[in-house]
Image 1: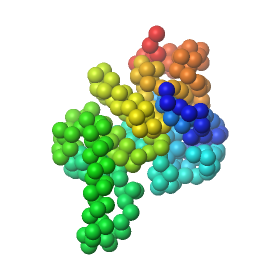
Image 2 (image 1 turned 30 degrees about the vertical axis):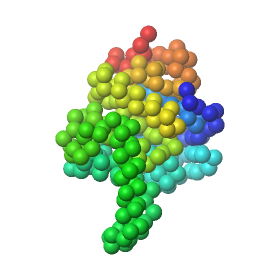
Image 3 (image 1 turned 90 degrees about the horizontal axis):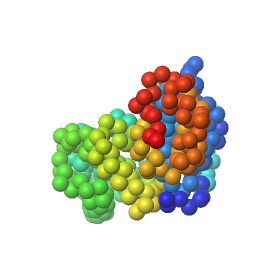
Image 4 (image 1 turned 45 degrees about the vertical axis):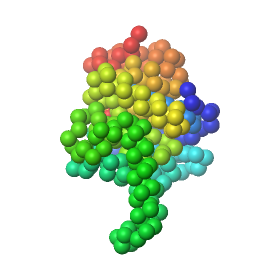
Length: 269
Ligand SMILES: Nc1ncnc2c1ncn2[C@@H]1O[C@H](COP(=O)(O)OP(=O)(O)OP(=O)(O)O)[C@@H](O)[C@H]1O
């Protein structure tokens, strides 16, 4: 564990509705700087909605978000990115017709200092900037061990590698907080182990705080310092993995006494 004990992200009484659907109801929890926090819960529990609140895609009707000591009621996606929050998506959101390197470079857009006109005119400052951004993107490529595919079009890569490139694009922004929406969905056991290693490395070696949504409870227990459990938009668990996995309310949500067809999400004993 890498956590400092200082709160990086605080959610206070967040509620979000879509007309009659209450996606998130009065959720509060804190994420310490340097920790890996997993958001878990059955389908429709409100996990993705909450990530979308954190990075400003959805505006909650109620509640406050504190990030790095600053409180705000409404965060726009651009503000969130400028403040150091990066995100990957449940369904891969990459430019399939662009190379791995160019996709990762798009993660550096907010770091560019040269004006678009300088870039259009090919001025020296823009060239130097390009070199610096490329160097950084190459470091991310090395970190994630995707050098052999750096010039390959992303659409031609297998799914597991595309997920890694998406992680790379998020890391290229040098985020303070990385939000990962099901980074291991659809992967086999070996791919999950590999992805877990990269997430741990980003956390430990780069010092990135991580909030991730994951359905594989074995992965969650092995990777996280902190687990928050949602069910029907409410928080029903919040604590270290060992505590959460033995919580009767959490077990009930997963073992299906309140839901049907939960068999694929049972905590491992
Ligand atoms: N844009 C939207 N418009 C209307 N309803 C929505 C919208 N986004 C989410 N919801 C609803 O909000 C509730 C929470 O959905 P959400 O996607 O956050 O759950 P989840 O826990 O991420 O589920 P899953 O594990 O299936 O991805 C669901 O009832 C969903 O149908």
